[in-house]
Image (cartoon, rainbow, N blue to C red; front, side, top):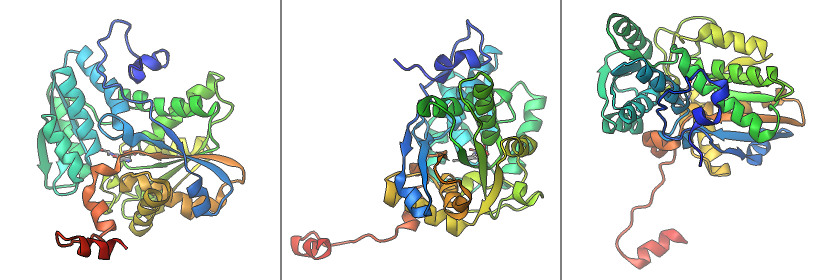
Length: 347
Ligand code: F0G
């Protein structure tokens, strides 16, 4: 039976032999071929999506959280805390519940998707909605965790990246080598850094023959790395990556440069078009931040060498953000309780 990513990749992870593993059997997510996207982008490439929305709380954050909470528990902590645009908080709340610990989450008031808020609440987190943005929340969390015995579980916690790097392992295990390109959304910039670690480790261990070019995608209204400046007021429909001063900025730049990759921006309009495109052509529902990768493929795909293998990381499940889904596809037919009325709209 599959027992989660710590069990599967233990020899690559800093976990003590006798540690109590806090897991929800995360990881092992599908790599789905999407030839429809090659067609839409007009390129000759084998394209796959790594559908991280199928993790237990619906995002890739669970990979990092199984590690971070396992470690926090081992260290005897009773409370975990994070700042979040929604997914980290949902995951932290779930794993804390699993571990019998408390969780406190700081979120930007009014700027997280509805499903994510619902998750944090039902898992029992103390939800603190701050009249500020993610970057403000992270500042407060760093301060509080320094002054109190609370485990910080944002991705500045190194165990988070250790867990998240296993997605790169899974991709190589599935493809039997690394892809040529990996396209990934960038917010606080932890995940692109984690993927680089994972691909580099497998390459050094001789399991893969190359490290993919990492292409990070930021939203145009929250593109600090692309423009090399802090965004004081980040703004984007992709609230998951509405971040103006990413904590892992330098690591992401190193991942970009060492992989011969790039970090680019896509507009909200491009994100929303891509969000609909992948749902309607491939049957895959992801959240807007994840669709930034699809938008990046459409926008920059002409630079992909013909015959390449490309993986897009779809970081979060579309169900997290029902409001944007409904706004993006507004047509719905309201009819009388009557066969004729129904027949009229059906045909
Ligand atoms: N995609 C989704 C769905 C996310 O939730 C995030 C980050 C990212 C991409 C970007 O990943 O931060 O490692 O560069 N969400 C964080 C959160 C910030 O609080 O849930 P990153």
